[in-house]
Image (cartoon, rainbow over all chains, first blue to last red; front, side, top):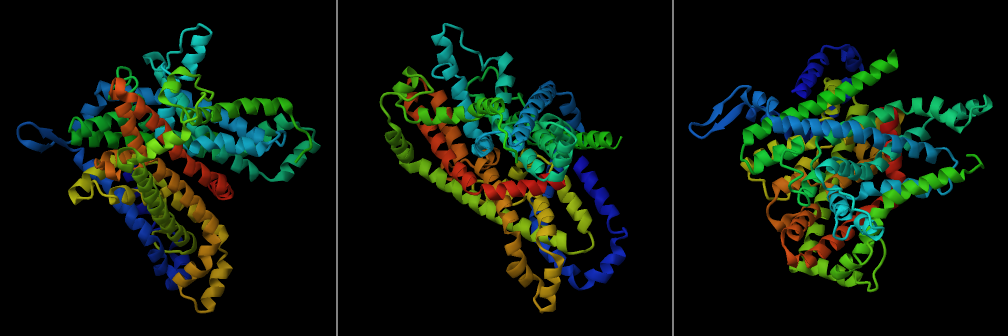
Length: 315
Length: 283
């Protein structure tokens, strides 16, 4: 919902804006060509992104009844969703996941990027590529692989525990599951975030470092006072991508579900819930409302992150 | 930069590196083992018999070469989607960066806002629309939704801004070249590193895509590798005593499926690193 209104706001503002007269001077001859260049992208954008979103919004306003077929329900699906304990639990779970997993992942990524950029490492390139490598592994493979690693039959952790006579770690029990999933996601995406941060570090002007060195700042002081502040925009991108990733968590829990069906129920994450509603429960309209609501939560959370960080940096 | 090297820091990073590489090492080791050895030998080291090649042969030929088919499907979906997406992004990014027209800022703003729209929230409504249009269970059901990459457009716009100097476009215009000729013969070459970055990231996104094909396809002949492996793994965990053989297929199949992307990343590292720099720094 909020995407829609944001877009409309932008759309309503732009035509009346001062761009007008600049456009007239330069744009008369080539302005039309500009449309031709952006038209293919915008066409697919509308067909594959705006239209499904609008369709979800439309569907979410109806309900299927046993008697009478599909009837208009207004905000009925939304009031149901907002009081649906399974959905609320799922949202709470991914929010908790976000609050714990993302800071850990980003701190590791940040430290690794700073270490690689510091010039203090031997074989820095090996570290850069090695830590990034898991990003090239499909999340399905990552989840299957970690599932086997966690397992009791032939997982190395259980084997090691057996050897020293300890109890095997209970990775797939209710208490541990969220942490086990967080570990898989951390493993997959730390390198990706590290590369974004590292790339941003490379762009910091080097005379700043030299000035700091002249002032007697050591490597840690330079990192804290110059590098980390310079990384702010890149970190913001990482956080926003992480909001999007965490809240739509699906692949990992869906695959782990087979290993621990009693731990991961169909409402474990909101996305898993929407999937189950649509494809096993045949509750298409309610699933559309859940999808749409989930999208709205993600967009709102992303804007909240943007708002909080930009306001703080100005103050 | 400096001549000093820190051993402590190098060791700390080595520990981190082990965490990231050990699971992949395990996967490699496991795919060299017979099912019996998988259970009876220690996971992080090789068993006495190395049966990597017989495992590979079994995986590839199992069930009428279905694994090979899945790999082929994945390559096809990924290459067509990524190629199409990168081309649309290059064209659009250049258009947004180099032309002033009514609605430029508004449309670009709308695309930027859409970066935050989760793809999985779109998947269910897209499925419903496609099932009305009869596109479900066809390759188009995977390719069409993957052609949109708002983040790719954003990257290309930023990249085009600097990579193609306005002076060169003006000079080409004075020489009488048409706008599209300028794009294809002059600008495209300058945009190449940015295009490769977008190509690579959309390639990974389609290669790794699971949710969309899971809901769009129910014909195993059309599965990409992710859905195929997941189907095998549920066979392996569902069946009782006869699951051993399938288990080995899942493990060896997983190992084989990660090789192409790892190779692509290592070969094309120059591109994705510079592309990420452009996106991350200027945001």
